[in-house]
Image (cartoon, rainbow, N blue to C red; front, side, top):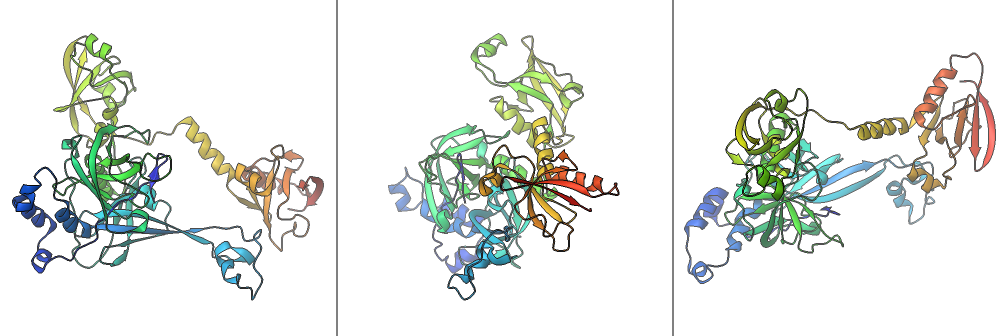
Length: 491
């Protein structure tokens, strides 16, 4: 499985070559140190090229194939069954026909890599999201069921854990901030399920914003990343993980030489939090920044544009408490220069809660420093998101007086050919012992309850509950294939 920007992502992993007895006794770190120290004749002859064969052989055992399974609920009432004795009868369980309650199982494939001998595995959130079962398979064929320790949709990182009963081969995160454009990199993973595939290329760009989220700071490469590479590692020539392969830009869904990886500096901090807390605990400053243009930089006395210009300071936020104001231009966080405004969110998010951070800024062309106590970021829910959640709650299937109904969503209208002008809720099922059994049918549209229009399952449920307070039947207006029928039910 791969994420596309469109996104599609997958990783290439090298066929694992059996290690020598001596090599098996050494850790990956020791082997890498040995490779770095050696200066073979072949390396001399090709001093301008990285030695990929040794890296692939050493690193591959720590890269795994990840497969997931998810039970999908199916509407068994509306799906015809293949006749008993038919050659196609065995497909009834798969399609849900004939009243099968098994549902379908969807599977996805991705990649991951072990970061600790105890079996901690990093992958992408979109690889395992919604999975009921997660399995990891090593290049030698060993397969283990994995536990999901935590996930972070904002950065698309997830952390798994397996109990293998023995130390596992693992790799380490490196310093992605030192990675440079033009530097050789190598990806290992499972594109299209072909485990142990290796691909190499160079870093094409740094600090890419692909409109994926608030913490976009991707490493762009020309490494061939495809479906199944998602969650796999991007290595530098020292054998350190400098990125987690996450997305590709492609009009076809296949690699066209533009792939993106979450930098190790960001991924490792998320992994540490997931491992310790099972969730992320991001820092919070409380400002809204603006990009610094050449003109703004000069007006503040800078020779080049960098930093973040504050346009808003949230009341009672850490920034407000520290005295930061609108119009201040933040240039440094601690000793680190803030290269661009986009990096402010990421750098603050990575800060420790309650940490006292020196924020250097320019106000009226004078440099100042504020000591900011970083607080924990609380979930910010926009009005749009609140409305979406409320609508989802209202549209959730409901059962009242033995009548199960669903919302007339766009998908439901298209599936059952319900016209846009029709309002109400669709009957999914009527219980056999219900008062409505034999009167109201699956597929009927209930437009009114007690002469009041209902437009969502929640409204239907509330109207039916309210009708119980009256010692009289309630009248329902039914739309059955365009024909309107009134039924009076004793609820």
